[in-house]
Image (cartoon, rainbow, N blue to C red; front, side, top):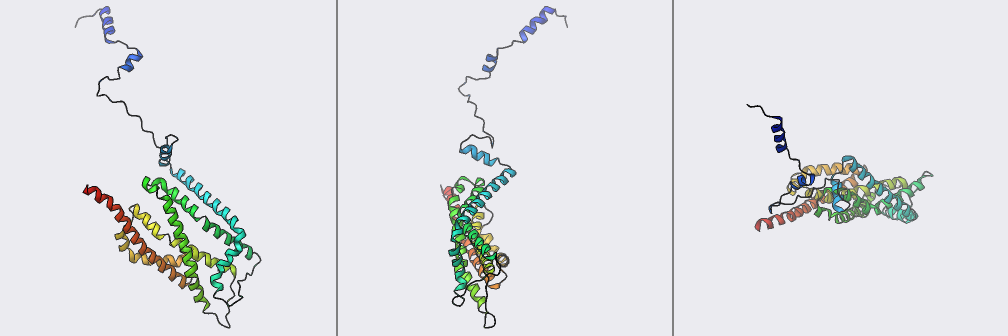
Length: 306
């Protein structure tokens, strides 16, 4: 190894290091070949979207558990406000509504019979209950829409388009349950118990206890009639299938009688009527799930054939 002069080492440093201007350094990163492709734009992160619909969808997908709880609380408050406003609107019509509710039992009593109340606040509390239940029934479409709107962010785009139809179907089933209780369950149940009256046991019905019985029965039937909608929705999510529902039919019958005993007052007649209605609705649910499954399989068959 020979000794190098200071001048030669300085020249080597000059050769080895050639600083370039910033513009040329950035330009050297670009390629002029035709095969070069422009860099793809960065995909926005969930929750950092723009103000349009896609950005809102990304924000919904990026919501945390606490955000979902806040969304649920907001929709529940909206439902309570709707029920409260409609309750105030039904207050002036509480008298005709009460007459309509008492009609099934008054038809079974002697002429000029009436329901009585034994406490001074009873008439006011019954009027409030009648207005509240009427407001809740009228607000049912809005409440069902809020429920499906809360579930919609977790659905596909084609399923989101069915939210209005599901809202209408839930409302129709809810009203069908109330109508079933009013026109069929009430007359049968009340007629059965009034047959035990005699000359020494005359019925003296209080309006508050009667309203409690009527409302509990109506609510039980209204909620039970949502069974086909719930099972159809679960089949769309792939949780249940027609074969599963058929296989679990014996266990479902036992569960139906348990639910009927819990939801209805402690009398055998209303329990049997509700259980029979639920078993019929369960069979209807199997039919609807089979239909839903066939509709899902048609596009798959067409895709395989093509």
